[in-house]
Image 1 (cartoon, helix red, strand yellow):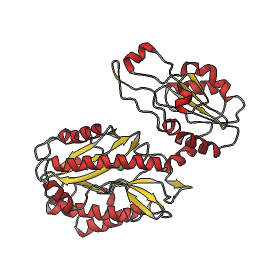
Image 2 (cartoon, rainbow, N blue to C red):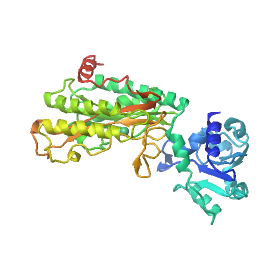
Image 3 (tube, rainbow, N blue to C red):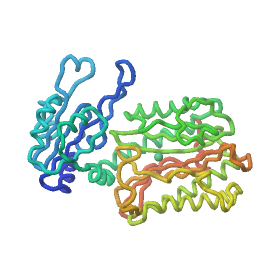
Image 4 (cartoon, rainbow, N blue to C red):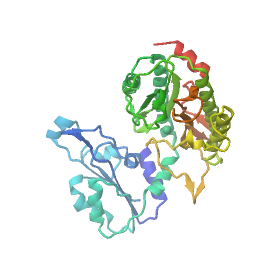
Length: 408
Ligand SMILES: [Mn+2]
């Protein structure tokens, strides 16, 4: 029902003579005859709830047609059951269903008479075929309308994302309790691999487990070095539940106790993060959290003698403070309207993730060298402010240190 409502809502924003064409991802080859685990395209999944590869949805105000793989006894013995054309109408609430090999024959008939075609070609073979079939016909951007819908989460989406946030938060807590000097980064990562899998979820993105100076490499994913006594470890890991993401970063001391310098940097990032979250409410500009965070970090670094008053903050804080999150961890939806930052609206979900990264080649007091700190939570905009979906996970220094005493 929920997918039917979304299709209806989408069509209500288009002219009557519009037709929407949206395909899912193909399977991706890993090597030899091995594929990566299949993951549907988010636009397609949002409108259909169908998670088989090689499928196409054609949607108009009067009909919903799905093209999908045929039943194939031999293939199903190897790869598992397929929904099939006969079951599709009832299972997917579709009016008609055809096998995908009939694309060339059926699509020209389906689009006949429709003036506006909404289609975002992706660099996949099925979309290449559709482009050929559409020949000289013009098509309009589906994303510009659909992605605004995806940006505002409904109650079903919020409860799935809360579940993803809860699983990720618990895994981070266990990681804090399991970490030891001498452990490898990948061993700490395995806490997340195992916990996510135990809860029928996947990594929503490649996790970052970065000890010491590795935390200053923003997209460090090798995760293959030893975690050292007296260093911090930065973990950016979040799971995906039913294709919906969570995204959490915590930074904690490998031996369970922050040093004085680590505390100073950590507290500054935490103060910035809390100030940023306090700037999230309906009607507020979406760049207010970033402004609040950078003001605090800049002044704090100046007070510590790390940054000169005329210096560039981007030397130590070089990324944004958040991004939309949903079916994609970096979710769709515009950030600006006519070049101006838009306002928060209830139902939006954003991350809040300021950080400070001090490399050893930065000419400052060496006690601060190789400290990289980021703190990231997932925040839902509500009618009267916001709810932090990842609030169950500690982030105050004293709370992290005390949870780490309860070692596992
Ligand atoms: Mn993030």
